[in-house]
Image: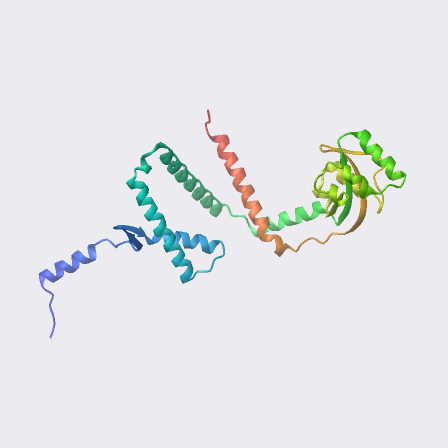
Length: 259
């Protein structure tokens, strides 16, 4: 037997399918619904930071949102949202979200390619050279003090003892030891003097930098083994992205009318 829908049934069905979709909620607090979209956003942020998607994570996010809503409702009851300070903070938060969203959108349309990262890797690798050095130094304020230290070294006094008068707090208590380092990590006058030294020798004249006057001793040198590209690829990409953003923001500022 064929069932023919009545006019009323047809009308009810049409009205039903015309109803707007009801937004999903994660919880309802004192009659106020917390949209599922908020939970999804927080979960996505946690996953982006390496947290695995799990029931524990979802429960923690739900609890956080409920806690925020409970406290926010109390703040509204006290009228705190109407204060000038609160409004300023809300404005700043909104501005920050908009700016962050813009930057994310910009990076999607201007991505850093693997070729860009590889080129940066090769550039840094060439700047580092093929050697690293183990050095000691004594840093003093005046040139005559550095010359006096060199004179004492010439007479056979110990470098690590003389280093106690250094004004470099990071090395003075370690006999002036700077550990293994690449010359690129030092200011140019220091690096130039260091790379010219022979093993076991110290500078015959003080080396002047913006920090003062140095007496440098080369303990040893060895071949530099640069980290593999895959080991630093992520860090290099992040740095290039940051540089891209900084340049773009600088460009936007030059175009803006600032009074």
